Length: 265
Ligand SMILES: [Ca+2]
Ligand SMILES: [Ca+2]
Ligand SMILES: [Ca+2]
Ligand SMILES: [Ca+2]
Image 1 (cartoon, rainbow, N blue to C red):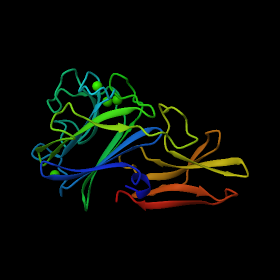
Image 2 (image 1 turned 90 degrees about the vertical axis):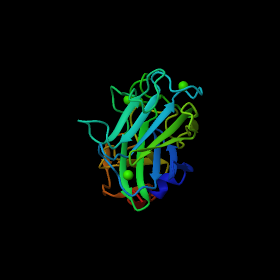
Image 3 (image 1 turned 180 degrees about the vertical axis):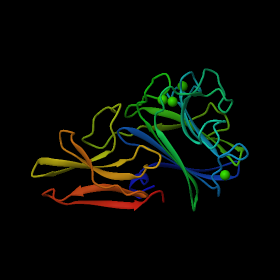
Image 4 (image 1 turned 135 degrees about the vertical axis):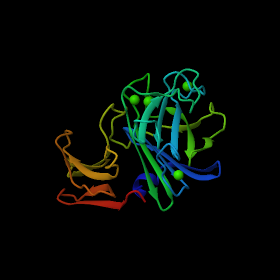
């Protein structure tokens, strides 16, 4: 995680079933991001020993859940025979109980998730569109909306329990932050990045922005540039294992400075 990306995130630390957990939540104008650092020294993927984290949502923040179609996603080290370990976009069935097997795979997989072993533990990282493909399977969030969420953790095949409460119908609340100034006033269904406008003499020549990759092996941020009209787009940097962010252009637009950090830390 690049310090420029997570330093403004909401953060919680707690212990679940004897395991230390740190949680971060934030959003930009397209995605809501969750990260979870779990104190464990092996990332287990298999039927005999499995690590797994499930996020489930009170999508409409009405304090009632899980309700039919409310959002879920998971990183699952053993989702079942014939399925790959990794990220799954899910939703709940009416009256179903999380972990009972009655969570349902979405017809369209939105978002990405990644788990990696770091010196501090297993680092789970997720991004999910504020506006998912289906209102029946994904949350549809606008700036200022609240969304309820809860986390269920299983480490080394042992169910460590749920946060914020052992009562699965209790949720933490996250308020979707307004976008950076100059961004659209409602979340677009597609698009990405945190735009940073670089303008000289009152006329923007280009907009450099930091954008996360959208595939599992390209989750770090790279620099991209677009014209003021929104096209064309070109990638300026592509370094695996490093975040480039906070681009800033010189007055004449000929030089772009940026910050960089190892990813994930
Ligand atoms: Ca483990
Ligand atoms: Ca609800
Ligand atoms: Ca979906
Ligand atoms: Ca979903």
